[in-house]
Length: 72
Image 1 (tube, helix red, strand yellow):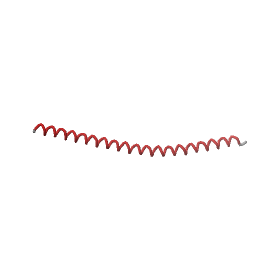
Image 2 (cartoon, one colour):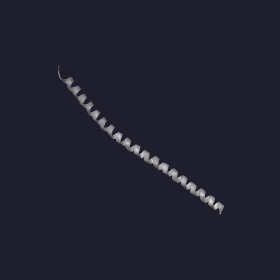
Image 3 (tube, one colour):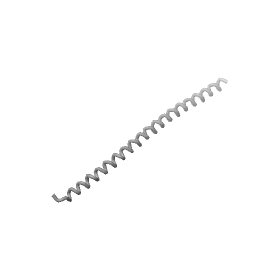
């Protein structure tokens, strides 16, 4: 009977440890997903800023070419 209780205790302890590890991994997964969402937001912002800067650069190049064609 004593060995049965020891075995049962070991099984329960192992189960508790597995649950604790699973909860820790789940927390890390949630943290990574949150950070990935933040990075997607930053990427979206940077993409918009890049498009704006590219449009400004194109406009500046066009203006420079037009100024070069105008006789002084």
